[in-house]
Image (tube, rainbow, N blue to C red):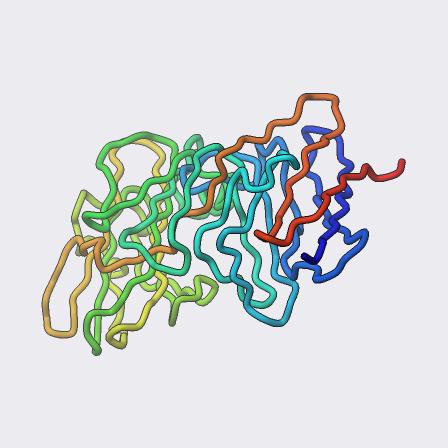
Length: 314
């Protein structure tokens, strides 16, 4: 059996972001997947799909070929290298993957889209403009809470004051042809659509400049998009943003299909999301004023040798 010796270089004070580096001390058949980074005592960086802060580990395929990591182990105990194992998953060349050390033990199938829209709510933000939401330090990475909408492209009515929200997903066009979209919201609301799955290609297609009543679709001409051509079976990233200050609040999106069918609001089952994120069985929380000694070992079954940990000099 070929031995794999992995030296760990970890040296960061607790409560600060830190880098976990895998360094080969002696390597025969070195694994092409490395632990590229992890965050300890996470409270200000990114949140998981539940809107919660947990520590996280990032892995990366540094090879030029896809790597099947099913059955690989991730652990905080070098004596138990398979404390948590990866589900069926292929890491493509250069691909990164983030795993949460949350204790939630989730292993959703990777690479398969799931039905629904993701709603992210950002509380404690004043102002009526979507720009107030976008310029907030909590947007987009730190929502107050996150939910999956599976019924309609519509959120609750008269929920709260001084908040904003983002609702997004991949729209799978059911027909080829010309579509029209509408947005209704209170206060300022905007609807964006990409030319494909890439969220970086979105363009503003409709907006509510001030406010409307719930499911009021024709108060402003800008609520309705122009003619938009989509192809059946293709995915298009769509996103709605809304900002509420006081009084009533709501958000909904509708559409007209090429065959003339009008749905206001549109059904959420036309949208898809990437699968839920991976979560380990263990939770990592270093003690204050201590150097972190936790070792996250990424090891392949049947090819495990001694795992060493080192502190960085100085």
